[in-house]
Image 1 (cartoon, rainbow, N blue to C red):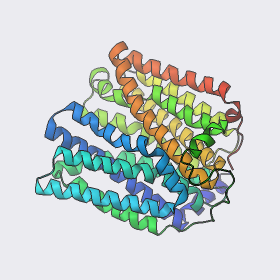
Image 2 (cartoon, rainbow, N blue to C red):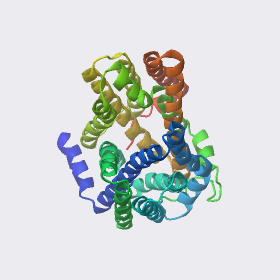
Image 3 (tube, helix red, strand yellow):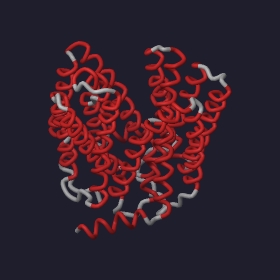
Length: 408
C-alpha cells in the first residue's frame, strides 16, 4: 500500500502542469503573507494606531463579501487560468505602486488602504478560480492527494512568508513590496504554463451561467456540501485561538517575541507534517466520519492549549491542532470539488471562500470579546468545547455527510 500511494504522489510531482500550479499558488500565497506583515508594520509606523491596524483586515475582507456572487459567476463563465493570471498581474502592479512609494518616500496610509482594497478585490476572484482549476489539472482519482500537496505548499508559505516579510521590512520598508512584485510576476508566468489534464465536465444542472445565486441554491440543496462548509465556519468561529496567542506568549507562558513566533508557526508545522502523510497515504474509507473526528481533535487540542502553562505542551497542542485542521481541509476541499459539477465550481468556491474569510475574521472578534468578558483561559477553553459540540451536533444534523464513505 505504501509503495502504491508513494508512487501516486510521485506521479503528481512529475506532472508539469501540477508543478506549475503549485508554484503559482505558493508564490501568490507567499506574496500575500509578506504583504500582510509589511503593510501592517508600515501602517503602525505611520499612525501608531491599533484601530488603523485592525482596519487593514476589514478593508481586505470587504471585497470578498461584496463580490462573492459576481466573482463566482465570472469564474464559471470565463477561462479560470486567465482569471488567475489577470489577478496576479493586477497584484504585481499594485505592489509595484507600493514599492515605488515606499522607496521614494511618498507612500501614505491612504495609499496603503487603497492598495489593500485592490488586493482584496483580486483575491475575491483569484481564490475561487484557483480552487476550481485544481480538479481540471489533476488526473482522475488523485484529487485528495493533489489537495494535500497543494495545502502543504500553502502551509510552507504560511511558515516562511511572515518571517520573510519582517526581515525584508527591517532592511528597507520598500523591499517587501519589491519581493512581492517579483513573486506575483513569477506566479503569472507559472499560471500561463498550466495545461489541462482533462476537459471540463459537461453541464449537469439546470443553473444558467447568468444565475449569480446558483451557488447558494446548489449548496442549500446538497446537504453534504452545506454541512461541510457550515461545519468549517462554526468550528473556526469558536475554536480559533490565533488572536489570543500574544496574550498567551506574554502573560501565561512568560515568553517573548521569539516564543510568539514559535507559537504562530506551530499549527503550520503540524499541518505540513500531516500533508506529508496524506500525500503518501490517502484516506480511503469513512471520509465523512474522519472529517468529524478531525474537527473533534481540533477542539480537544484547543482545550489542551488553553489549559497549558508549559511552552513545550502548548507548541505540541498547536501542532496537533494544525494537523487535525489539515485533515479537515483536505477532506472538505476534495468533497466539495468532487460533488460540485465543473460549471458550478466557481460559484460554490466563491461562497466557500466567503465562509472561510468570515470565520477567520469573526473568529478573531469572538475570541477577543469572550476573552475580555470571561478571561483569556476560560474563553479559549469555551471555544474548544464549543468546537467539539458543533462537530457532534453536525453529525446528527447532516447524517449524509457523516456517512460519506469514499472520495474517489
